[in-house]
Amino acid sequence: MKIDVLSLFPNMFAPMQESIIGKAIDRGSLSFSVTDFRDYTTNKHNNVDDYPFGGGAGMLLMAQPMFDAIEAIKENDDKKSAGHVVLLDPAGKKFDHTDAERLASYDHLTFVCGHYEGYDERIKTLVDEELSLGDYVLTGGELGAMVMIDATVRFLPDVLGNRESATGDSFQDGLLEYPQYTRPADFRGMKVPEVLTSGNHQKIAEWRLKESLKKTYLRRPDLLEGRQFTKEERDLLDDIKTELDEG
Ligand code: 4GS
Image 1 (cartoon, rainbow, N blue to C red):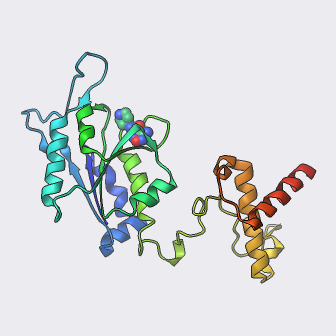
Image 2 (cartoon, rainbow, N blue to C red):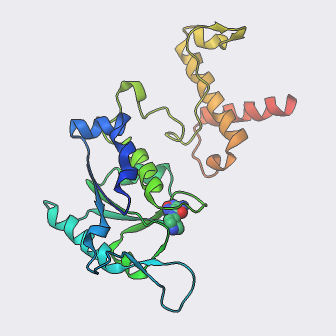
Image 3 (cartoon, helix red, strand yellow):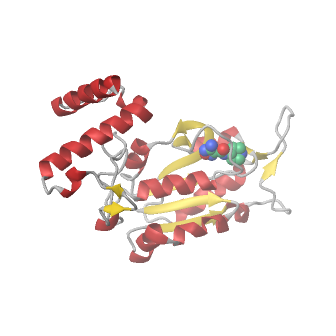
């Protein structure tokens, strides 16, 4: 996969050189490149923003540097494409796990990050979709882009080793993760649930599914709305509700 980013603060992307993403880049599974669109300004002060027509507070990123920077990305690309272009914007669709999985199916992604100001609306003609990290205002799109890149790249084959396998994590099957324990079995009197040391794999799987369902039901009931339950899940959820009523 190839990822391009357009940003006025390329140094903010230093975290991409670390850990799992950094290794994916080193191995060649991922190519990652940040373009400073200030390099594409044509005015003598290298301004990237200007006052809004009609007045009002704040400045807007001008269309010209962004259009020329996207042109340069296309020019450098084998297929003369910027791939699937994402604009970071709090008015976009709120990013979630399913978006990450969907973005992972593109072979080329370009993230456009504003900083401080808004965008000239015409920039949006360059963009395939607008995504938001969440319902709050950031100082720039960069952190949002990094979060989305991180969550997306996890879905690429050969990015996660066995140690950090993508399956079984929260959200993978629409449920929150069950509790996990490692040695020792008794830590300061806090004991690991007996079933986990029983060696009975069927019982362990059932316990884990039930714990996942209970945690999701208690903390994130919204995740269960519209979910297709298996018969086993239905039965376990009924047990959970009965137990909670009794307790
Ligand atoms: C977000 C967000 C954001 C909006 C950038 C105001 C600076 C700021 N970007 N998800 N201008 N939430 N962007 O707050 O993506």
